[in-house]
Length: 317
Ligand code: AHG
Ligand code: MN
Ligand code: MN
Figure 1 (cartoon, rainbow, N blue to C red):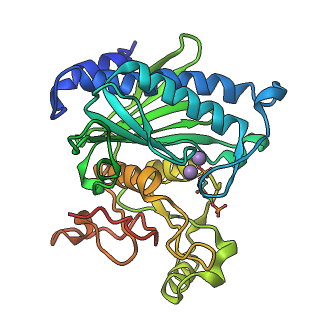
Figure 2 (spheres, rainbow, N blue to C red):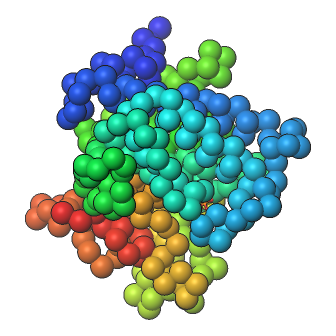
Protein backbone atom coordinates (compact mmCIF):
# COMPACT_ATOMS: atom_id res chain seq x y z
CA UNK A 1 0.00 0.00 0.00
CA UNK A 2 1.36 3.46 -0.94
CA UNK A 3 2.53 5.61 1.94
CA UNK A 4 0.09 8.35 2.99
CA UNK A 5 1.48 11.79 3.78
CA UNK A 6 -0.73 14.37 5.45
CA UNK A 7 -0.51 18.09 4.70
CA UNK A 8 0.63 18.74 8.30
CA UNK A 9 3.47 16.21 7.93
CA UNK A 10 4.46 17.61 4.54
CA UNK A 11 4.61 21.21 5.79
CA UNK A 12 6.78 20.18 8.73
CA UNK A 13 9.07 18.16 6.46
CA UNK A 14 9.53 21.08 4.01
CA UNK A 15 9.89 23.85 6.60
CA UNK A 16 13.57 24.32 5.76
CA UNK A 17 12.58 25.59 2.29
CA UNK A 18 10.85 28.56 3.87
CA UNK A 19 13.13 31.61 3.92
CA UNK A 20 12.05 32.77 7.35
CA UNK A 21 11.83 31.19 10.81
CA UNK A 22 11.08 27.49 11.08
CA UNK A 23 7.60 26.98 12.44
CA UNK A 24 6.14 30.20 11.04
CA UNK A 25 5.04 28.56 7.80
CA UNK A 26 3.38 25.74 9.72
CA UNK A 27 1.39 28.27 11.72
CA UNK A 28 0.52 30.30 8.62
CA UNK A 29 -0.77 27.33 6.67
CA UNK A 30 -2.59 25.80 9.64
CA UNK A 31 -5.26 28.51 9.47
CA UNK A 32 -5.95 27.78 5.80
CA UNK A 33 -5.95 24.03 6.43
CA UNK A 34 -8.49 24.29 9.25
CA UNK A 35 -10.66 26.98 7.68
CA UNK A 36 -10.65 25.06 4.39
CA UNK A 37 -12.12 22.01 6.12
CA UNK A 38 -14.78 24.09 7.85
CA UNK A 39 -15.78 25.95 4.67
CA UNK A 40 -15.87 22.61 2.86
CA UNK A 41 -18.36 21.33 5.44
CA UNK A 42 -20.64 24.34 4.89
CA UNK A 43 -20.33 24.21 1.09
CA UNK A 44 -21.34 20.56 1.10
CA UNK A 45 -24.52 21.18 3.03
CA UNK A 46 -25.38 24.41 1.20
CA UNK A 47 -28.22 22.79 -0.73
CA UNK A 48 -29.82 21.53 2.51
CA UNK A 49 -29.32 24.37 4.94
CA UNK A 50 -31.45 27.41 4.17
CA UNK A 51 -29.42 29.66 6.44
CA UNK A 52 -26.23 29.24 4.40
CA UNK A 53 -27.60 29.47 0.86
CA UNK A 54 -28.29 32.64 -1.12
CA UNK A 55 -27.57 36.33 -0.95
CA UNK A 56 -26.58 38.13 2.23
CA UNK A 57 -28.35 41.31 1.10
CA UNK A 58 -25.16 43.40 1.21
CA UNK A 59 -22.51 44.49 -1.32
CA UNK A 60 -18.72 44.30 -1.06
CA UNK A 61 -16.32 47.12 -1.92
CA UNK A 62 -16.44 46.09 -5.61
CA UNK A 63 -20.20 46.61 -5.61
CA UNK A 64 -20.88 42.88 -5.96
CA UNK A 65 -23.72 41.16 -4.08
CA UNK A 66 -22.30 39.20 -1.14
CA UNK A 67 -23.49 35.65 -0.68
CA UNK A 68 -24.01 34.22 2.82
CA UNK A 69 -21.12 31.83 2.22
CA UNK A 70 -18.84 34.75 1.18
CA UNK A 71 -19.44 36.30 4.57
CA UNK A 72 -19.20 33.00 6.48
CA UNK A 73 -15.89 32.05 4.80
CA UNK A 74 -14.44 35.54 5.26
CA UNK A 75 -15.26 35.61 8.98
CA UNK A 76 -13.87 32.12 9.49
CA UNK A 77 -10.52 32.73 7.74
CA UNK A 78 -10.09 36.02 9.60
CA UNK A 79 -10.95 34.42 12.96
CA UNK A 80 -8.43 31.61 12.48
CA UNK A 81 -5.68 33.90 11.13
CA UNK A 82 -6.22 36.25 14.08
CA UNK A 83 -5.93 33.44 16.61
CA UNK A 84 -2.78 31.95 15.14
CA UNK A 85 -0.51 34.99 15.67
CA UNK A 86 1.86 35.11 12.67
CA UNK A 87 -0.37 37.43 10.60
CA UNK A 88 -0.86 41.04 11.70
CA UNK A 89 -3.32 42.14 8.98
CA UNK A 90 -5.58 40.83 6.23
CA UNK A 91 -6.86 42.38 3.00
CA UNK A 92 -9.94 40.55 1.77
CA UNK A 93 -12.30 40.91 -1.15
CA UNK A 94 -15.11 41.09 1.39
CA UNK A 95 -13.71 43.92 3.56
CA UNK A 96 -13.57 47.61 2.60
CA UNK A 97 -10.34 48.18 4.55
CA UNK A 98 -7.35 46.34 5.95
CA UNK A 99 -8.33 44.20 8.96
CA UNK A 100 -5.70 44.71 11.71
CA UNK A 101 -4.97 42.16 14.44
CA UNK A 102 -2.60 44.26 16.62
CA UNK A 103 -0.52 41.23 17.53
CA UNK A 104 2.95 42.07 16.16
CA UNK A 105 2.73 39.34 13.49
CA UNK A 106 5.38 39.49 10.75
CA UNK A 107 3.12 38.59 7.80
CA UNK A 108 0.13 39.96 5.94
CA UNK A 109 -2.42 37.93 3.98
CA UNK A 110 -4.53 38.95 1.03
CA UNK A 111 -7.38 36.63 0.13
CA UNK A 112 -10.48 35.91 -1.87
CA UNK A 113 -12.29 33.87 0.79
CA UNK A 114 -14.83 32.47 -1.66
CA UNK A 115 -14.13 32.69 -5.36
CA UNK A 116 -16.87 31.98 -7.86
CA UNK A 117 -19.53 32.51 -5.21
CA UNK A 118 -22.23 33.20 -7.80
CA UNK A 119 -21.94 29.45 -8.50
CA UNK A 120 -22.83 28.32 -4.95
CA UNK A 121 -26.56 28.05 -5.57
CA UNK A 122 -26.10 25.91 -8.68
CA UNK A 123 -23.77 23.31 -7.16
CA UNK A 124 -20.70 24.24 -9.19
CA UNK A 125 -17.12 24.20 -7.86
CA UNK A 126 -15.94 27.25 -5.93
CA UNK A 127 -12.68 28.07 -4.15
CA UNK A 128 -10.51 30.16 -1.83
CA UNK A 129 -7.37 32.01 -2.97
CA UNK A 130 -4.66 33.31 -0.64
CA UNK A 131 -1.37 35.13 -0.84
CA UNK A 132 1.15 35.68 1.99
CA UNK A 133 3.68 38.52 2.18
CA UNK A 134 6.31 39.39 4.75
CA UNK A 135 5.43 42.71 6.39
CA UNK A 136 7.74 45.57 5.25
CA UNK A 137 6.38 48.58 7.15
CA UNK A 138 7.74 49.26 10.62
CA UNK A 139 5.05 51.28 12.44
CA UNK A 140 2.47 49.99 14.93
CA UNK A 141 0.11 48.76 12.25
CA UNK A 142 0.47 47.23 8.78
CA UNK A 143 -0.09 49.71 5.96
CA UNK A 144 -1.01 49.64 2.26
CA UNK A 145 2.73 49.36 1.55
CA UNK A 146 2.64 45.82 2.98
CA UNK A 147 -0.09 44.77 0.56
CA UNK A 148 1.07 46.68 -2.51
CA UNK A 149 4.29 44.66 -2.84
CA UNK A 150 4.98 43.07 -6.25
CA UNK A 151 3.87 39.48 -6.80
CA UNK A 152 7.52 38.42 -6.72
CA UNK A 153 7.59 39.30 -3.00
CA UNK A 154 4.97 36.67 -2.13
CA UNK A 155 6.40 34.15 0.34
CA UNK A 156 3.60 31.68 -0.28
CA UNK A 157 0.41 31.43 -2.29
CA UNK A 158 -2.31 28.85 -2.60
CA UNK A 159 -5.89 27.96 -3.26
CA UNK A 160 -8.51 25.56 -2.01
CA UNK A 161 -11.00 24.12 -4.48
CA UNK A 162 -14.32 22.84 -3.16
CA UNK A 163 -15.22 20.50 -6.00
CA UNK A 164 -16.10 16.86 -6.55
CA UNK A 165 -13.30 16.47 -4.05
CA UNK A 166 -11.75 19.27 -2.02
CA UNK A 167 -8.10 20.10 -2.62
CA UNK A 168 -5.56 22.50 -1.17
CA UNK A 169 -2.73 23.51 -3.54
CA UNK A 170 0.14 25.74 -2.42
CA UNK A 171 3.66 26.93 -3.18
CA UNK A 172 6.39 28.62 -1.17
CA UNK A 173 8.50 29.16 -4.30
CA UNK A 174 9.84 25.59 -4.35
CA UNK A 175 7.37 23.94 -6.71
CA UNK A 176 3.67 23.27 -6.26
CA UNK A 177 2.03 20.48 -4.28
CA UNK A 178 -1.61 19.45 -4.05
CA UNK A 179 -3.48 17.76 -1.19
CA UNK A 180 -6.90 16.12 -1.36
CA UNK A 181 -9.23 16.13 1.63
CA UNK A 182 -10.15 12.63 2.73
CA UNK A 183 -13.59 13.35 4.22
CA UNK A 184 -13.67 10.07 6.13
CA UNK A 185 -10.78 11.18 8.35
CA UNK A 186 -11.02 14.96 7.79
CA UNK A 187 -7.39 15.21 6.66
CA UNK A 188 -5.69 16.70 3.60
CA UNK A 189 -3.35 14.06 2.12
CA UNK A 190 -0.63 14.58 -0.51
CA UNK A 191 -2.20 13.50 -3.81
CA UNK A 192 -0.45 15.69 -6.41
CA UNK A 193 3.28 15.97 -5.55
CA UNK A 194 5.41 18.43 -7.55
CA UNK A 195 2.65 19.55 -9.92
CA UNK A 196 3.82 20.53 -13.42
CA UNK A 197 1.50 21.99 -16.01
CA UNK A 198 1.74 20.18 -19.38
CA UNK A 199 4.00 21.75 -22.03
CA UNK A 200 1.17 21.65 -24.56
CA UNK A 201 -2.50 22.29 -23.83
CA UNK A 202 -5.65 22.15 -25.92
CA UNK A 203 -8.03 24.11 -23.68
CA UNK A 204 -8.85 27.82 -23.81
CA UNK A 205 -10.96 29.38 -21.06
CA UNK A 206 -12.54 32.79 -21.48
CA UNK A 207 -15.99 34.38 -21.09
CA UNK A 208 -16.70 34.53 -24.82
CA UNK A 209 -19.91 36.46 -24.22
CA UNK A 210 -17.59 39.46 -23.92
CA UNK A 211 -15.79 38.70 -27.21
CA UNK A 212 -16.75 41.87 -29.08
CA UNK A 213 -15.49 43.96 -26.15
CA UNK A 214 -12.02 42.41 -26.25
CA UNK A 215 -9.07 44.17 -27.91
CA UNK A 216 -8.72 43.21 -31.61
CA UNK A 217 -5.55 41.18 -30.97
CA UNK A 218 -7.29 39.05 -28.32
CA UNK A 219 -10.24 38.48 -30.69
CA UNK A 220 -7.82 37.26 -33.36
CA UNK A 221 -6.12 35.00 -30.81
CA UNK A 222 -9.45 33.43 -29.82
CA UNK A 223 -10.29 32.96 -33.48
CA UNK A 224 -7.00 31.15 -33.86
CA UNK A 225 -7.85 28.87 -30.89
CA UNK A 226 -11.00 27.85 -32.77
CA UNK A 227 -9.11 27.28 -36.04
CA UNK A 228 -6.77 25.01 -34.10
CA UNK A 229 -9.86 23.21 -32.76
CA UNK A 230 -8.90 23.82 -29.14
CA UNK A 231 -11.60 22.96 -26.59
CA UNK A 232 -13.54 25.84 -25.01
CA UNK A 233 -14.03 25.27 -21.27
CA UNK A 234 -15.34 27.98 -18.93
CA UNK A 235 -16.91 27.40 -15.53
CA UNK A 236 -16.93 30.99 -14.31
CA UNK A 237 -15.14 30.06 -11.08
CA UNK A 238 -11.54 31.19 -11.53
CA UNK A 239 -10.15 28.60 -9.12
CA UNK A 240 -11.91 25.76 -10.89
CA UNK A 241 -10.97 26.98 -14.39
CA UNK A 242 -7.38 27.55 -13.30
CA UNK A 243 -7.11 24.17 -11.54
CA UNK A 244 -8.37 22.26 -14.58
CA UNK A 245 -5.98 24.08 -16.92
CA UNK A 246 -3.06 23.61 -14.53
CA UNK A 247 -3.63 19.85 -14.60
CA UNK A 248 -4.66 19.38 -18.21
CA UNK A 249 -2.78 22.20 -19.94
CA UNK A 250 -4.38 25.25 -21.48
CA UNK A 251 -4.80 28.98 -21.34
CA UNK A 252 -7.07 31.09 -19.10
CA UNK A 253 -7.81 34.67 -20.14
CA UNK A 254 -9.74 37.53 -18.59
CA UNK A 255 -9.08 40.34 -21.09
CA UNK A 256 -10.11 43.97 -20.66
CA UNK A 257 -13.74 44.77 -21.44
CA UNK A 258 -15.73 48.01 -21.63
CA UNK A 259 -17.16 47.23 -18.16
CA UNK A 260 -13.74 46.30 -16.72
CA UNK A 261 -11.12 48.23 -18.73
CA UNK A 262 -8.32 46.86 -16.51
CA UNK A 263 -9.68 43.32 -16.61
CA UNK A 264 -12.02 41.91 -13.96
CA UNK A 265 -9.52 39.85 -11.98
CA UNK A 266 -8.10 41.48 -8.88
CA UNK A 267 -4.29 41.61 -8.82
CA UNK A 268 -3.92 41.31 -5.06
CA UNK A 269 -5.92 38.20 -4.28
CA UNK A 270 -6.66 36.55 -7.62
CA UNK A 271 -3.97 37.27 -10.25
CA UNK A 272 -0.78 37.45 -8.16
CA UNK A 273 -1.26 34.21 -6.18
CA UNK A 274 -2.33 32.21 -9.25
CA UNK A 275 0.53 33.72 -11.28
CA UNK A 276 3.01 32.51 -8.65
CA UNK A 277 1.48 29.04 -8.68
CA UNK A 278 1.38 28.67 -12.46
CA UNK A 279 4.97 29.89 -12.81
CA UNK A 280 6.09 27.51 -10.07
CA UNK A 281 4.39 24.71 -12.03
CA UNK A 282 6.33 25.59 -15.20
CA UNK A 283 3.67 27.81 -16.81
CA UNK A 284 3.43 31.48 -17.62
CA UNK A 285 1.39 34.47 -16.44
CA UNK A 286 1.13 37.83 -18.16
CA UNK A 287 -0.99 40.97 -18.28
CA UNK A 288 -0.95 40.68 -22.05
CA UNK A 289 1.53 43.53 -22.45
CA UNK A 290 4.50 42.26 -20.50
CA UNK A 291 6.15 38.89 -20.84
CA UNK A 292 6.66 37.14 -17.54
CA UNK A 293 10.12 36.02 -16.53
CA UNK A 294 9.42 32.48 -17.68
CA UNK A 295 8.33 33.59 -21.12
CA UNK A 296 11.25 35.94 -21.63
CA UNK A 297 13.91 33.33 -20.92
CA UNK A 298 15.92 32.92 -24.14
CA UNK A 299 15.55 29.14 -24.18
CA UNK A 300 11.83 29.15 -23.47
CA UNK A 301 10.00 27.64 -26.42
CA UNK A 302 6.61 26.97 -24.88
CA UNK A 303 3.67 29.11 -25.90
CA UNK A 304 1.85 31.45 -23.55
CA UNK A 305 -0.28 29.18 -21.42
CA UNK A 306 -1.84 31.58 -18.98
CA UNK A 307 -2.74 35.11 -19.91
CA UNK A 308 -4.89 37.88 -18.58
CA UNK A 309 -5.24 41.46 -19.63
CA UNK A 310 -5.71 42.47 -16.00
CA UNK A 311 -3.23 45.30 -15.67
CA UNK A 312 -0.34 44.31 -13.47
CA UNK A 313 -0.98 40.57 -13.77
CA UNK A 314 2.62 40.42 -14.82
CA UNK A 315 4.63 40.04 -11.64
CA UNK A 316 7.10 42.94 -11.73
CA UNK A 317 10.78 42.12 -11.30
P1 AHG B 1 -15.71 36.26 -6.98
O1 AHG B 1 -16.82 35.25 -6.86
O2 AHG B 1 -14.65 36.03 -5.95
O3 AHG B 1 -16.21 37.69 -6.99
O4 AHG B 1 -14.93 36.04 -8.34
C1 AHG B 1 -15.63 35.96 -9.54
C2 AHG B 1 -14.63 35.96 -10.66
C3 AHG B 1 -13.95 34.63 -10.92
O5 AHG B 1 -14.23 33.59 -10.08
C4 AHG B 1 -14.42 34.22 -12.30
O6 AHG B 1 -13.41 33.69 -13.04
C5 AHG B 1 -14.92 35.48 -12.89
O7 AHG B 1 -15.36 36.28 -11.83
C6 AHG B 1 -16.06 35.21 -13.81
O8 AHG B 1 -16.44 36.40 -14.36
P2 AHG B 1 -17.48 36.46 -15.55
O9 AHG B 1 -18.80 35.98 -14.98
O10 AHG B 1 -17.48 37.89 -15.94
O11 AHG B 1 -16.97 35.55 -16.64
MN1 MN C 1 -12.83 35.74 -7.08
MN1 MN D 1 -14.87 36.05 -3.82
